[in-house]
Length: 315
Ligand code: ZN
Image 1 (cartoon, rainbow, N blue to C red):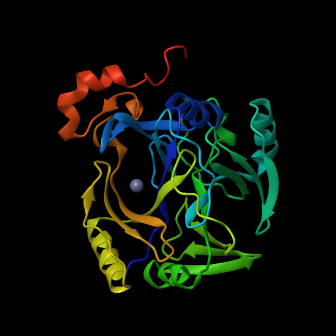
Image 2 (cartoon, rainbow, N blue to C red):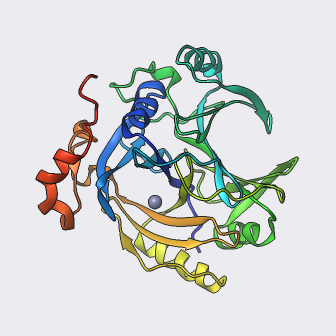
């Protein structure tokens, strides 16, 4: 069977949409590649941030609810989202985050230097310096100089109380390989054709950590890449055979998705690379229009009135 290709996207819950937009586009320099609504709650946004074209492996998405209480990350959750940067960009980012009032802690993990900080809702984000950073297309609208731009996901970390079944799923069904262990962290790599971005996934084992539930600052789910719908169907069958309960294929407009809870309870998704974000907007215009799924198009006038303008009017 074809192996999983890497991380496709990560989806989280946010508080205020303007603060969220400002942090990811103005501080981190990502592009808002799609502005749509929560299909189940169309009076609220769904934002997709990524590289210039919203490549799989670069996409962080948010459901912002202005009054959502903040929650601390706990067990059985994706506990950190890490972007790759060029290893020579570490000083730039240390200074930039300081200037923007973002407190960051330096760390070293598997020999690579990183910076750990939180987004405006307290969600843990990391930047990790790499050699041969993926040469992703440059988004000219970014306030971050091209050489220092984020280079897609380096990895994600999930924290769980015990590893055996969660690990088994990743190695036996997803085809990932254990690349190393450091303290209570198990590093896995995607064994397929080497993905440019999102090629690593860490399981952090911490039996003492509580589960704090869902709120602003919490990752809702992590999606892994399938080449196409046939590959996704193959993976879905394998997940079922493993004893888990995947949904059917759900059309998310920009990809086809299957969801299931992995053995520790983390919500996983398998998402196809096609059709991608240029399905309904030209590359140059990505993220500028309010895109509504067909079933909500009749509400456009009302939604345009209730949704806070993004970019905010003062910017
Ligand atoms: Zn998703």
